[in-house]
Length: 266
Ligand code: PEP
Image (cartoon, rainbow, N blue to C red; front, top):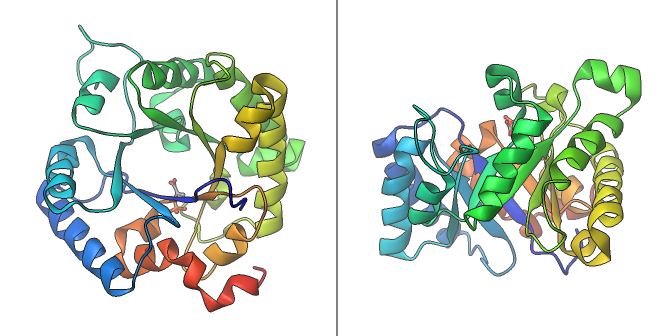
């Protein structure tokens, strides 16, 4: 973690919690963080509910001035029109979403999203003033065949080719083998790939983009391992799946600067 980049802890709820459950969850999360003296200036928290919850969560965040950024889990590459079931980035922006996830491995697997589709969606996000969180990561087979960095770096190159060096984006390194498996990468593995991804940004978009872009690690992040990741120079936060559905776990992850384990390696 570089002190110039504000850490981001992003909770990807996936297809969990309906709009009523989302309201209760966000209220409890806000109370838990307030009780624990969470400092919003130190760490940014983002919540990424399903589309059907966005309006409810937006209303709650606004009404109670909660310190949460709102994001969506996907968007269409199109602005509007005959695309049944798709959601435009313009609609997300109208709901005051700040972020949108692109290229999550579950969308690549379940919906056949190629790097080119991810690039088009990421471009659409920027067009609609959303900050894309571009997910990249290798499978267990890729890891065996090519090592950890090659596939994520290749994926990132395709997406960055559709963006300008001045665009604002976040990159999430999410090894597929670590997602939902309980087997996180080590902090050193995460650092090595995050550094390689930052080098790709430097090569394609220059020093300023490379130094200011936040790179997250995702894959079985928990309160017990977050501090080890955040100690690493090139890891600027986490994309959290399963643990983002527990108020206690997610609030503990977001309070990583307070962890007494900050000096421990994982
Ligand atoms: C994810 O799907 O983005 C993710 C990181 O999931 P989990 O934290 O459950 O591994």
